[in-house]
Length: 141
Image (cartoon, rainbow, N blue to C red; front, top):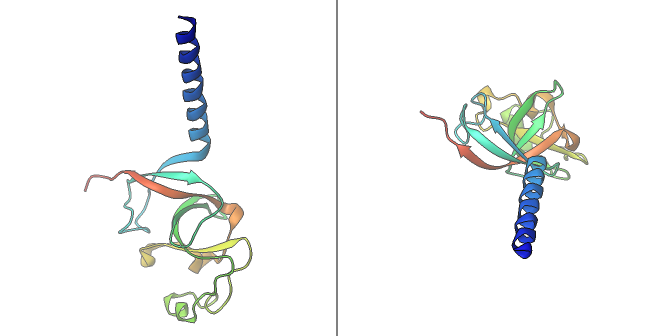
């Protein structure tokens, strides 16, 4: 009996610790806007893993300079050479340069309606909140 209670207590403690760790490392948020279509739609629920390390191609949650959370795709990371051809997508100021240390470049998948690095330049790694793990729920069409 005592052994069962100890095992049950240990299991309960492990579940509680796991829940605390998950809450510290994960963010559940709702997409607002169409800047990431067709990948994500307004109303989609997404799970974000907290990290400052965004890799090229990952959808990244970041805090803008105006303290607004934005979901954008990381397209270049520290040390990447930004292609000169990018000047054709309104990135004249960044095209042909090297991404500075501790920064990334982000773009929305739906460029015409996206507020991204074309407007505010490089994103400091300290402004990166996390990266997309999965879409939890797709909004109803």
